[in-house]
Length: 559
Image (cartoon, rainbow, N blue to C red):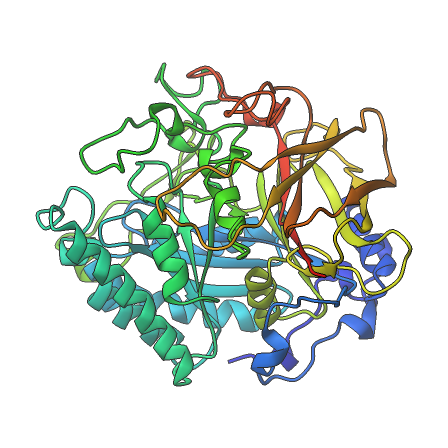
C-alpha cells in the first residue's frame, strides 16, 4: 500500500509541474498556495506515520496557521452500491477532471456489499492509490442509522480499513438489522436509538485500541425524511466527540429540479420531495423538507438547528457533496446481469453501457457542482481528516469562489488570531477585526457560467453552553450581523469588518451568494434579511442559485 511518503503533491501544488501545463483552475489554486507560503517543500509530505494525537487535535486558542485548501467529496457511489451505476474508475477520473484532491467512496450497506463488494472495491482503491498518487482516496460506508437516516463512515487507510467497515456493517447497520425507518422493528424507537449510540461507541473503541488510526462519521441529508431528530444528532455527537463531527449542510442530487429535465412537476433540488411521515420527528415544520438555496433547512436557517448546536460551543462540521448515483444529461445505463447473478451474491452491479439517449438522473459528477474545501498545512489523508474534525472547512456550489480566507484578531493587532474552526480569547468589550480575503472565480464553471459573488454576510450567535432541551432547534440570539455588498468586485480583495465582544462568548460564521435568488430568511427578515429561499417545484436550476458557507470562529470572553 502506498504510504504518505509515496504520495505526490497535486499538480497545482507541485513545483515540478510547469505552470504552462495547468488549467485556469490549477493556476488560481497555485497562486493561493503561494500566498499562503506553502508552495513546494513547505507543503510536501511528512512522515508516513500518523501524526501524534496532540498534533491532530482541533487547533484552538491562539494558533492561526496559513492554510492550503484541498477540495473533496465524501459521498460517492459506484457499482458497489446496489442503486448506483458508474464504475470506480469513471468516478475517480471525473473527480480528477473537476479538481478534487480527495474522495470518499461510501457505498450503501447491503449483505452483498459486506460479504463481497467491500473487499472487491478495496482492491480497486489500492490500485488507484498506487497509480494516481496525486489523489487522496478513502473507502467508506453509507450507514443506515438505526431509527434514522444515513451517515458516511470512513477511516484512515491501513491494514484494517475494510475489515472495520464490514464488521460495522453486519453488526450495526439499521437496514441489515431491520431497524431502519419503516422497518419491522422500527416502532421500538428507544432500542433503535440506543443501538445507534452503541455503534458509534464501537467505532470510537476501534480507534482507541489502534485497530484503525482514525475514523469519522458525518450525517447525510438530515432533513430529507425528517427522521433525524435534534436529540439524536446531539446523542451521536456526544457519544464519541471527534468521531461524529458533523453533517451534510448541502446534500447531493442538486440537479433534481432542473426545469424540463424530469417529468415530475414536484421535483426539488436534492430530491427533497417528501412530507412528514409516521417516522418523522414531529417537532419539524412541514416546510423544512425542501432545500433552501441548495442547503438543508437545518443549515440554511439562520438561528436554526445548526446554529443551536453551535451555540453550545461545540464544532459541528457541515459539508457539500455529490451523492452521485446517476448524473443529469448522461447517456450511460446499467448493464445486464449474467444468469444467476445478483447484487447479493456478487457485491456489485454489472458495468454500465453507453447509449445515445439521456438516462434518468438528478446528480452531478464529483466536484462538478458541489465542493467541500478543507484547510491543511500538509498534503495527506490524515491531514484531510484532521481538517474536517477541526472545522477548517468551507463549502460552495457552482464553483462560486476560487478561495476565501477568514481571520479574527484583536483590532490593535496584539496576540494571535483564529481562523475557521478556531477559538480566540478576549475581554468584554474588546474590539476585534474580522478579515475576509475573497478570491473570486477567474474562469467559467463546468456549466459555462462565470460565477459572480454578490454579497458576504457575517452571522453572529451567542454561545450559551449545553442545551437544556436536547430537542431544541432554535438559536434565538443568532442573526445576520453585517452584510457587505461586493457586486462587481473581481480578483482578490479583503474585507475588514469590525466586531465588538460583549459580555458572553459568541461565534461568527460567513455566508454569501451570487444574488440571483434570495429573500427573508426562514425565521424572518429581522434575523436574516436576505437568505436562501426555496424554489418553486420543478424550477430549481442550481447553476443560477449558488451559495457558499464557512465554519465558525469561536470567541471566548473572560475577565
